[in-house]
Length: 183
Image (cartoon, rainbow, N blue to C red; front, side):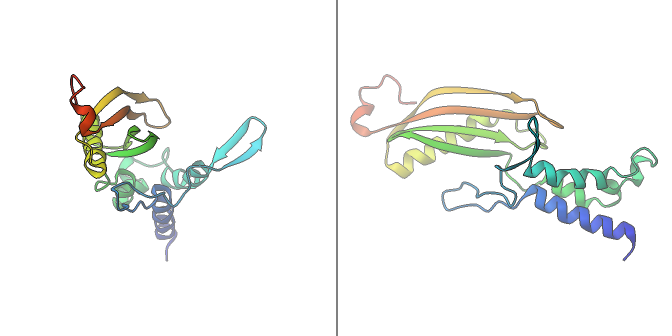
């Protein structure tokens, strides 16, 4: 196997590990990635690296090898387009939903967009409402109320990431008549 093919194979394996494999759970959420979110390696008292950063370093090094010496069409990601597939992940959902139950009928929902996507910037409210309706129907509630909602962009390296979060309160049938607006 040539050196270029070995580098390509290594990059594909590392990119697969870096992107993680999320499998949908029964409730529609996704399970944890292969690389855990937590965990860090402390180099000095003021310097530490997360597990994802440690995996991303060799992938980036291999992908950008020769960037100053070669034209763009000669770089590894452009000569082996399958590598771009692992970065873009076209079949992954645009939004990841995390939720926390605050009490019996109130939930905190946090949405985070994929880093690389085409469009979908106006979908956050729709995704949040869809999840609120799923919670409503699963719990036998008649309505839900959106208590708080905000969205924004978290600046990050190398790419900023859109987020949204809200607090949803589920409404029982006996309390629905007392509400001025159930939704």
